[in-house]
Length: 214
Ligand code: SF4
Image 1 (cartoon, rainbow, N blue to C red):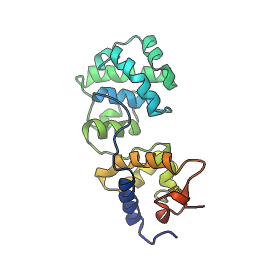
Image 2 (tube, rainbow, N blue to C red; image 1 turned 180 degrees about the vertical axis):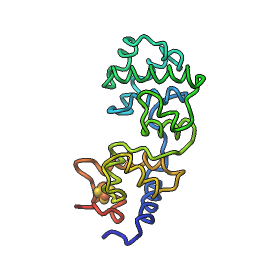
Image 3 (cartoon, rainbow, N blue to C red; image 1 turned 90 degrees about the vertical axis):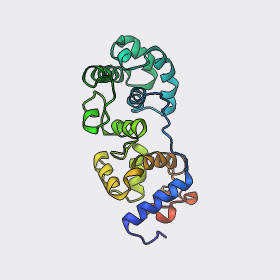
Image 4 (cartoon, protein in one colour; image 1 turned 30 degrees about the vertical axis):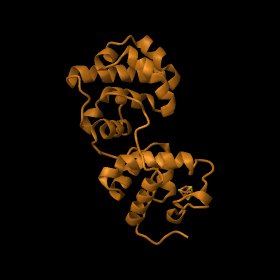
């Protein structure tokens, strides 16, 4: 039976348990600089982080920084990122974002949400990842398919739109935990709360989850 707690208390208890279950919550994309993280995050749309990590060593060897990527031959760029899917659009966005970083932002990835959102191919999800992992700035909660599914199943949001889900989670969770919440929910989504077949019988959140065994 679900514990009788307020929504906020339940969210905090879920957060505490997720921290116990998954003590480490590192970014799973490989990168050495903020620009490389931005590029890897753009590539991760509709693609697994593992696949992106297979592609980026050769990409960053050939084009290691914003200047190199801004001046990259688009066909060569496309061939290097092809296996991540949507490679034409991703290549155009990577080149465009790096041109803006070089020309408008003095070769530095901007550290403010509204400026990051000016870059081609960068929406809140990408900006949240870059701000949190490259600069330690928690400006929002990254909402991907796992975060969306689990937040809904856990009864923490009734919305389907990622922006509104993000807003609900930002109210419920402490700001320093916004990004690590997303990473831990992704782990839990993969390990236990799968899309098709959630393993509620072994889930350590079951007594906090209104969807348990439903
Ligand atoms: S109890 Fe079931 S539905 Fe709820 S989080 Fe766990 S696996 Fe998912």
